[in-house]
Amino acid sequence: MLKRTFIGLLRSHEQTGDRAKDPMLKSHFYKLSKEKAWEEVISTLKKMQGYKVLHEVQSVGEIVLEKRTAFGRTMDITVSVISVNPLTSAVDIYSASRGSLGDLGSNYRVILDLYRTLDKKLSAFKVTG
Image 1 (cartoon, rainbow, N blue to C red):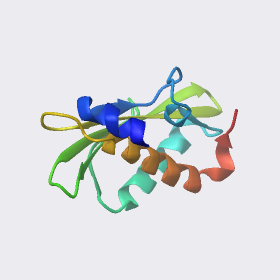
Image 2 (tube, rainbow, N blue to C red):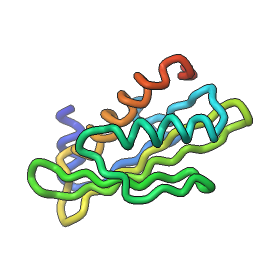
Image 3 (cartoon, helix red, strand yellow):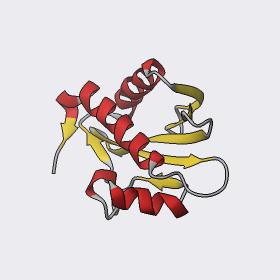
Image 4 (cartoon, helix red, strand yellow):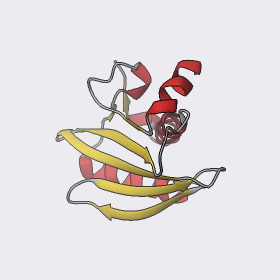
């Protein structure tokens, strides 16, 4: 966690993906069609405390969220639901803080929080490995 804070001194964004060096930032896969995954993800995100859904585009699979930190900064978060094949979907997250300087690792923690909540909700469909 200390390393994340140091990285966060300079960087004010974080994202997940297939090729992420940090294993915690790898894409999460679920055995659900894109449509089913979309329904589950959007309903879960709308119920989460502290997050506000600003925009959703089902055809593209993008959900834009906003989160205010305890220090008054605003974070913009984009959650993407991607169809890998007809029976599998991936969820990727991009989080960025508005303003100058770094985020002290808060974007990293927000991504982990979102993934933790989604994994709990979709635990029966999670693809591991």
